[in-house]
Image (cartoon, rainbow, N blue to C red; front, side, top):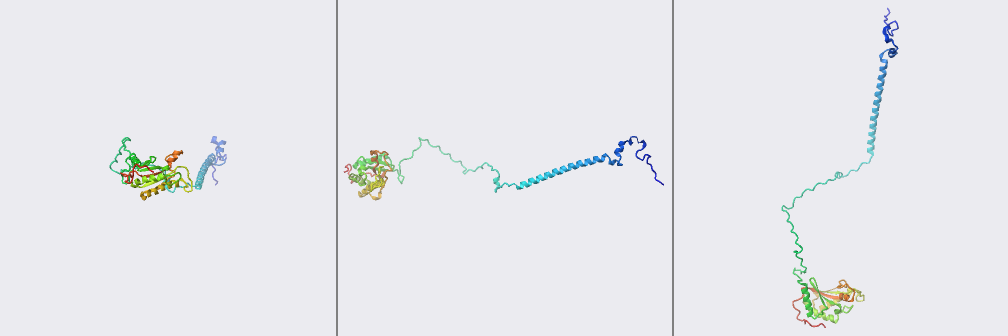
Length: 304
C-alpha cells in the first residue's frame, strides 16, 4: 500500500490560498535553505563575533606592549650606575640644630657683682720708685739723691763738668772724655788719674756693685790697637776699673763694659754733640752713698 501524500498539488511549495506568502520576497528570504536558520539572522551573528574578536586582540596587544615597556624600563634601571651611599647613615640625614640644654649653676649663691672702677681722679697711681729685693724703697726722692751726690762731688773738688745722672735705682757719675783720656787713647791722663784718686775712697765706702761704662761717638777709629769703637770704649772702661782697684776699691764689686756708640746722649753730628757722646759713666746704687765722707778725704781741694 503506498504512503499517503498530503502535499498540495502545486508541488508543496505554497498553498494556493496563501496569498501574500507566495510572494517572491518570502521565497527569497527563506528559500534555498529550507529553514529560517540559513537567512539574515545567521549573517548578523557572525559579524558580532568578528567585532568582539577585534576588541579582544587590541586589548591583548595593549597589555603586551605595557609588559614590554615595563621589562625595558627594568632592564635600563639595572644598567644605570647606582648612587654611592654614605658609610654612615647619619650623614645622609640633614643636620638639625637643637636648642642647648640649660646648664645647672655651679654655685647655689649668685656670684658677687664686681665693684665699679674708681674714677681716674680717685685712682691711686702706681709707685714709680724702684724697690730693693727686701721690698724697701730704693729711691725716695731722685732729685734729693742727685743733689746729695753733687754736693759730695763738689766737696771732693770734682769739676762741674762731671755730671750726675739718676737712673731709677742707680746713680751715674758721667765723666767726659777730655778729663780722663786723650782722643783715640785708652790710657788715663794725669788729670783723669787725679779725679779717680778723689773718687776712689767714696766709691769704696758705698754699698752695692759698681759698673764702669765706656761710650764713644760714631766716628770710626780703625787703627791697629782699636779696630773699632767697641775695643776703644771697652779698653777705656777697663783702664778706669784697673785704676780703681789699685786705689782700694774691692775688685769683686767692679765690672767694665763697653757700649761703643750704641747709647748716645746726643744724636747731632756737630763737634759739641760728638764730644758729649765720648764719656765714661761710673754707676752705683742710688742709696749706696754713706752718711759721712771717708776720713781720709779732704773736701774742697782742687784736683791736680
